[in-house]
Length: 159
Image (cartoon, rainbow, N blue to C red):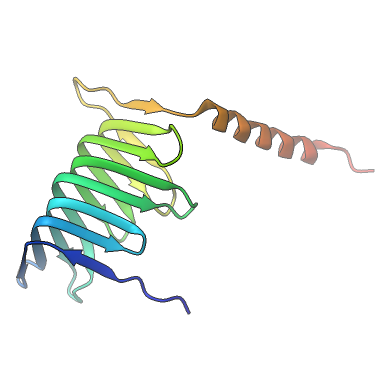
């Protein structure tokens, strides 16, 4: 049985509110879960009736480093980040940037939605700030060749 991942949180100040089911963490916030890390000026953790986190909201100078389930390593930053713990989905808001470590792949926009589980990204630009994508065409061409090779093998007539 795999070990449970622990959530390590360090900050200058923690304030819990039982009625609102929130914990507000302020000042030099650093959160680590497994290999994933997040830093911000402030983080609000929303919990359910069983005190399990359902949503995290990071505000101010947000930086993160995470690993997707398909093995990619991603770093980024934004002014605000909302993590839906149930969907395993990150919403980066305002001045959002996501870079794939070790590749030139980069995405910029006013809102980026990243699914850690499914490995997709949705990007929205703002009125005066269009979304920007930078991809490694060599990687894309290699993937296309692999797909064509698989298709060609399937289409061969059987003797």
